[in-house]
Amino acid sequence: MAVRGQRFHVDLDGDDESPQQQVGQDQASSRTPWSLVTDIHERSPSAAPRPPSPSKCRSSQGGFPAHTSRTRSSAFKQRKAASYPNLGGSEQSIPETGVSRLAGSASDQKQEIDLGNRQKIAAMSTEAIANAQQEIRASLDPSLIERLLKRANIEEDQNADDDPLIDAKSQSTPIEKIASSNESTGITPSQPSLERVAPSLNPEDVHIKTPPDLEPVSTFTGYPTPPSFHFPRPPTPPDLDPEDPEFLSKLHSTYFPSLPTNPNALSWMQPPSPGEIEAYSPSRDNLHPSAVRFDFRGRLLPPRLASQISMTKGLHHHGVAPEAAGYTIPELSHLSRSSIPSQRCIAYQTLGRILYRLGTGVFGPEDHELCQGIWQCIGQGRVLDTLTAEAARDGDSGNRSCWVTATEAMWLWRKGGGRRWKAA
Image (cartoon, rainbow, N blue to C red; front, top):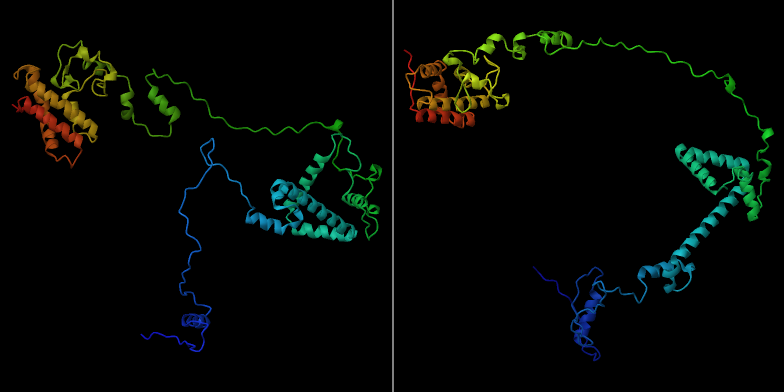
């Protein structure tokens, strides 16, 4: 790549300038306006540089540096003073009386604008004023005009005296106000006097049109009676007695006559029949093994104890004997095949504890009539098959709580001997 060179001339006859100075002049003459990068010239310092020193701050009572006042005015203040030379005074006097002078100049400016507007209105005729008002109303929003008029009325009310009798001067029309202001300011309009076209304020000259439907107060007979409305009311249902034997049928016919009825679904709300009460009554001499009841710990509940247990223990249910507490072996085997996992867990846990007590001889020897009857109920309900199937299932494939309780029940059965009942 060829490097572009520069041609320079050396004057051998001249003694005033050195070759280096001549080269610098030639380069300066050949420099274009868009040349941004130039040669670097080092300057010799006029004095030795001072070493850096920490800043000196005046201490204050609060621990923060004290405020430093400016010795000279800011550039903004200087431009402001140059733009408004009529403010007067030196730059030091601006901060002291600047606000008051600005406020005074603003009020003077408002007065000048008001005086100019009044002069323009005084020089206009009545028709020109009406045309100007129509143009303004056509160009502005009616809601804006209404707000401006309300604001003007509010300002006039604030400036009015507390006397309820307002003088005629405050009730004058806008044209008369303009005329009076022109007299006070000494303005002579070029058109005829505006007071001639002002309407008269004499009440006798004002003709008020009476509405056609206006009637005196003495003839007012009152507001018309509104028409009466009739809303049909449904018949009041009779009071139902919960102790009535036909309470459920009356409840359905009174409140739900259009719905189908199913007496079997409401049988649990019926009071227990005499046969259900005698099924596990303490007055009975003998019981079938399938009617023997157990609690959640696998302990046998005799009829007398089952009738004394409170319903808050959770052992009462709507089975064969609703008033007796506890569960029988057929009821537990039925719950072990429930679709609700919590019911299956309770059945597995209770059956496992019953099998442990039965195997360890808590309920008597194996050849005892009660033990034989309980083993027969367990075999007929296929309790061991249900527990074995649930425990053999992988814990991740089904409900884990059911799997754990079934495994615990099988372990208790093994601890009790692991005996199986064989049909004779």
